[in-house]
Image (cartoon, rainbow, N blue to C red):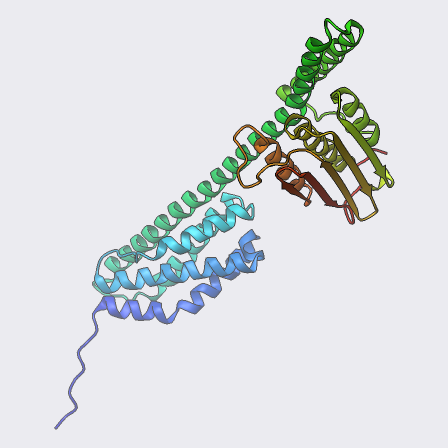
Amino acid sequence: MGEESRPSLSPGEVAARLIESAREQILSTYAERLASLGNSVAGDAHALEQSLANAGQIISDVVSSLRRGRVHVADDYRLIARGIGVTRARDGVHPKESLEAASAFFQTALSAMAQLIEPGPESLNQYVLVTLALEESLNLRVRESVSSYTGFLLQQVRRAQVAERRRIARDLHDRVGNTVSVAHRQLELYEMYRTSQPTKANAKVEAAQRAIQESMGNLRTVASDLHAPDPVQNLEKALRAYLNSASVEGVEIDLVVNGDEAWAPTTVLDETLLIVREAVANALRYASASVIAVDIEITPDTLRALVEDDGCGFDAGRVPAGRHGVGLKSMVERAELLDGAVRVNTRLGIGTLVEFRVPLKGRPDDRAG
């Protein structure tokens, strides 16, 4: 009995098998083409790995299309295309580089696949199908990548906008709100002394006027945002000036600063001033304290500030809206921007301790000159 004849393969299956067998060669030629173009994808191992994986899926789409006799793109293209878009947006790869890489693959793949199609009655149809499948698979992936690329950038813009709003809120609260609060307290004291001690009352009005003028200056700076506020030249001097303007009858405020301020960059001194001011302001507003102690220690490695009062304290787990909450949040955010931390210890009827700590070691000096 003669050997049974094997069923002949369809032209589409023959072309599909030939292209499948040439997969590694096509991918290798594609990588070489990217390198010869000087495309940035070729110089990044992870980006090149992504591109080759994406190209491999496109080859599979062409093979599948030849076997089906119509264009077919597998549904899993979205995952890798999105990953490519996000990665290139994050790494700052210009879209031109991605489009050049896509064009390079189309040309490389089409040239190689055209040579693998065997001459015959179906060769033209197969060539057209291969071209359409390449184009469709590439187009879908480019669209998905562009969508995720722009989505990532828009998300970064939104994050930047949120961060800017928070910065403005902190500056309004700490730079403007604080001085307005000082002015308000001085005017309250003016009312108390207006009849009984006119001289003292007039001094409180003058203090309120100075605070309002400072507040107006700070507001103009925040509103225009054309330049940063003048940096703190001397932290101890700036704090004493604030404590003198914010002083309240019957409250003793002690300030001790140890260490060399030159060890701390001006950005750290600026934020320390605002954090300590806010902690003192909270104690004056809410604590009903008789003593507020401010202790700042500066070493080459660390700046540590303590603000402690003997007031009524509060329940840290139940901070009323508009009271403590905004100020505490502002202090925490400012500390985190410096890779530091704020810790608050408080007990009802005992008092409150606010501790701010920021590392200085390895931080560049931002002083001019």
